[in-house]
Image (cartoon, rainbow, N blue to C red):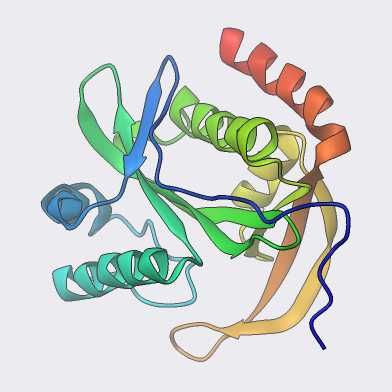
Amino acid sequence: MNVEPSNAEPMHVERVTLEGRFARLVPMDASHLEAFYEIGLGHDIFRWYPFSVDTEEEMRDYVHACLGYRDAGTWLPFTTIDKATGRIAGSTSYLAIDREHRRLEVGATWLGVPWQRTALNTEAKYLQLRHCFEVLGCRRVEFKTDSLNARSRAALLRIGAIEEGTFRNHMICPGGRQRHSVYFSVIDSEWPRVKEHLEALLAR
């Protein structure tokens, strides 16, 4: 039996460019691959992913998978541009898009080494969350990370997301390690507080 929520119509999630002071998020395209090879490979950036992105072939497969999920309507992958230089700096995505229940995940986020620990990631999260709550009408935006990735967990708490719990033995990583995934979220009633907090961080 298919029972639809009675108080909301499905979200309309479409390709879009999101722009701030530091970052521009543009729809991912296969033409971005060469830049991804240059900035993404050889720096252990994907160590916490549940699959390998260590070679050009694996990066190509990853990007083609992202674009396939986009075409299927379950992902919306972005390429992150550093506005100061115009260079491709990394990527981030909307994942697990649930239009009926007005929720999605922000994830598959990575940045090349020169842009790590800069305002780029904070502003990208701000732009994505603002679009989710103020344009798409999301009720919930979630994030997940490897339980061993202390840096990612701290970053999610820093932007104001709430830690919800741990999915044990959630994924099998390269080499066979069982990954526990820690879930965080921001819901629509919390967005004004989180928005104010992120704008204060970006103003520093």
